[in-house]
Amino acid sequence: MRFRPYTTIGVSRLRCFRCDRRAKHQWRTCADGCWRPICERCDIALNSLVLRFMRDPEREQKMKKYRQRIALIQ
Image (cartoon, rainbow, N blue to C red; front, side):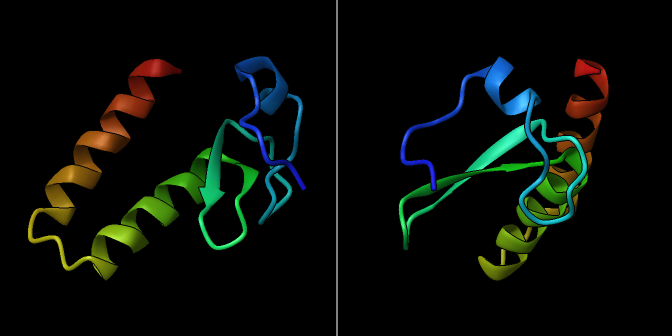
């Protein structure tokens, strides 16, 4: 378990906690305080899930912008 955030280089060396793909992002779960590496696909799914849970009326627009921003970074 990791209680401090990973560096950019550090997270890029890890595998996704959920699906074992190459990690690009990290998430901290407040319930246990752990930072977990996650891949791009799982990051997008998790963001979408959270926005849906929050009943964000602009979820689709926000996710579209987020996907575009990630595509530009690569």
